[in-house]
Image (tube, rainbow, N blue to C red; front, top):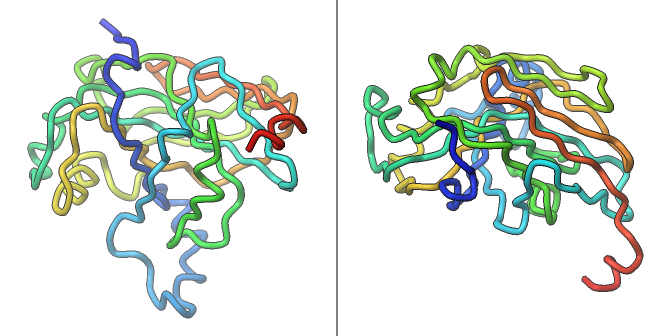
Length: 227
């Protein structure tokens, strides 16, 4: 039986950048330039801070003074028991289940150094609508992922195109830090991110996990004054 997310996904939100093959390929040339010289050899991580948490049906604020806002459809992996230095072979034993994530962000200049100011605005990480237990997801590496804006399909990809699969991500992260029950691993967003504006309705659909819906609203002068 599916479970309410607020009961289980209570921990840290860990994001992984550049985890779709097409997105990585599109940046390979820039990675040969200074200061990087070569593509990343380990997962490029960032954290969505607690203030970014949002829910199915929640409003996403379009901040005043920014030119672009981009949704980021992603598969979320909810950790079910602590994982420290686990092997690839045993990694999925630590997964409670899966959910949909929409990881909103302002456009960034660097994938190597994801910007806190771009990724950690209030309400910039929506999760839901529910947790689907791992036993009900036959193959998390074969799920269709779609992004709809006002009913129009704008992105379509598959978790089959991950650079690193879920077991490898868990194994590599747990090499240097313990993943705790309730932590959420955001497995990456595909290439082709789109711009959205106030008034837009954003839906992320992942096969077998349902649809996560949010709407974009403009930041008001009162909200700016309260900051």
